[in-house]
Image (cartoon, rainbow, N blue to C red):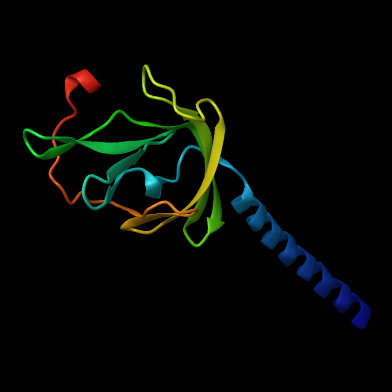
Length: 153
C-alpha cells in the first residue's frame, strides 16, 4: 500500500517538474519579431546635441541621432539604421534578448552591416534600459522637433 502511494506521489512530482521544464523551455525559445511592449518610438533626451531615437516595429528596429536645424532651432531625425529580421527571447522580469541582422540607410554602410547582432534590454512602461553601457530611452521627446529635410531622406 505504501509502495503504490509512493509511486503515485513520485509520478505526480515528475509530472509537475515536467510542466515546469516545459514552461521554462517555452520562455527560452526564440520568437519572431519584437515584443509588443517595445513597439513604439523611444527617445534619448541627452544634453546639448546628444539626442537620439529608436523605433521598434513588429519586425525591425530603426534609430539614429537627431540633427539640429540651426534656422528653426529644432531637431530632426537623421536617416535610421538598425536591425531587421528581429527575433527575441524572454529572459524574465521584463528582460528580453533581441537578435537581428544589421542594415544601413540607403547609400550608406554601417560598421557591422549584414552581420547578426544580439543585445539585452529591460522594458518598463516608461523606459527601455539597454545593458552594456547604452543610455536609457523613454517614450516622450523633451525637445522641439521638425520633419527631416527631404534632402536627407
